[in-house]
Image (tube, rainbow, N blue to C red):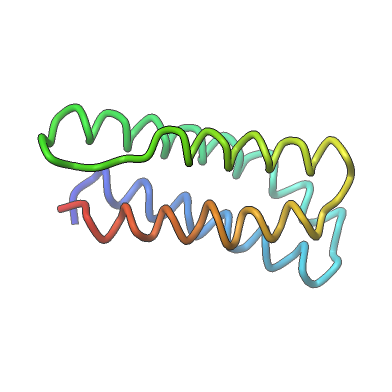
Length: 104
């Protein structure tokens, strides 16, 4: 597994842990882990953009990714943690898994 793919995979696992905590209604713990996970998400996204630049033919839906992050931040600002968890699980994590499958 490439270092880039490994970094993205690690980030996705961290977000999955946060989502699970939100679903378990462990709000304090989830929010405490979400802050560093958010930094990891940004690093993973930067890594994917770099990967795309280095690998011709690697498809990335920038708009989908941007909209997902905007929706997640709106849910966080509104205090809707269930919606935030759903967006992270069904939009972000699932799309990241699709991208990981395409990475070498």
